[in-house]
Image 1 (tube, rainbow, N blue to C red):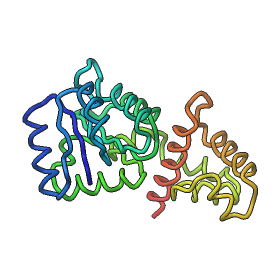
Image 2: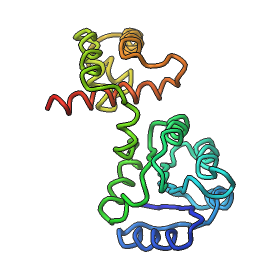
Image 3: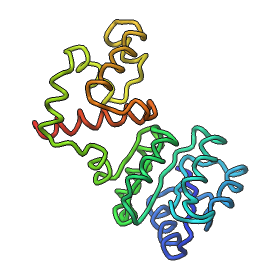
Image 4: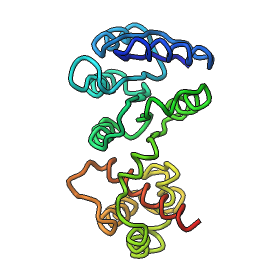
Length: 221
């Protein structure tokens, strides 16, 4: 795929270019700051942009750059790389979007296979979160998660399971043969029963609900 990247660390930046080329991807541009990357992508189309979170413009140039890129190129995938697993960074990432976006630690994408898998999933519209960060999003004890899921009705569990498969509200409604408004009501009830904050963004709560379901299923399995 076509990849653009920005990282102010020359050694890591050059190493990433070599890794991408070894995986067969085309690097359409390589910059040391977000402003230059934004300018580059006005003329060079790309499938995914890779951004260092802590780079110029300071202090968190990767995040501010991504906000501009998502507004100008809504179909562009975004992969954030960082040395730091910080929940407050992840929350900002989730506010930028929950589709075609990812946040990985730099030391975890040091192989062709892992990097290519991450990029492919993002290009295909998925959200890819470093497991240690996903775990921090769901901090309640496992017994608490199971107790909360036990409060959901059978239909609400069906809706949550389909949400975990990446289905849209319309897609869930079609599969369950009900109106889209009924799905919206079920999802609101799920958010309430799982204790997800009402002041959080809708997509943020959706991700948290799915993570709760997936982690509970993993523990049971």
